[in-house]
Amino acid sequence: MPPTVYIVIYTLYHHIHKLAEEVKRGLEASGVNAKIFQVQETLSDDILQKMHAPPKPDLPVITVDQLTEPDGIIFGIPTRFGTMPAQMKALLDATGKLWATGALAGKFAGTFFCTASQHGGQETTALTTVTYFAHHGMIYVPFGFANAHLFDNSEVVGGSAYGCGTVANGDGSRQPTIKELEIAVNQGENFGKIVSTYCKGKNVI
Image (cartoon, rainbow, N blue to C red; front, side):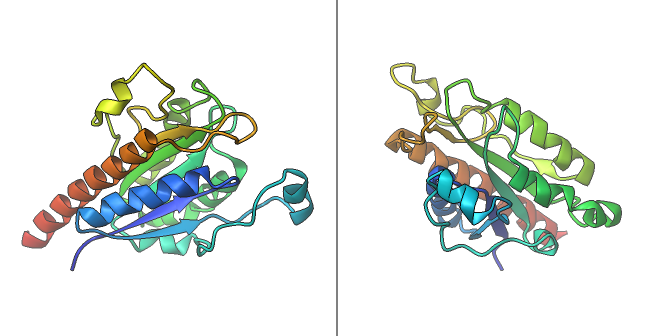
């Protein structure tokens, strides 16, 4: 049976969702079962309307207990001042029971991002999220510079050594580019191969 990876995202203007679909495509190309979830929204409908947020994507809302099901989890995180938004933090802060029982220990974890600007936290958001993985004993898999687009200085390209990413502009007007989407597929493929290799070896033992 192939391993399973969950992609857990918070997406307000759908930039993260678009990246998540490409990460999923890469995971599936590596032979992994992949499923996308979203975290529970904490903002009221009135606030979301004032923010001109589109309807949420048709995705199931992840529960804390469901985090124990897959072999790996990749978190899609739009940044808030260089760290994760409250909606994602609410999910992770509720994992105390899983921490106390070691339920997430040994599972793989990855990250990808959306920021308003080039310097808006596509590294610091990962660094402030890794503390959760460390406390849970999860195995963090950074992307590295495994795609040549990350060396391209001729245009704005989101992403970092910690995962793929996109730059949305402050008003959300910029959409993920072809290069950013290709990096997302690449990250899914690489993550999937690592999880698959580990699970195959574990089954042999």
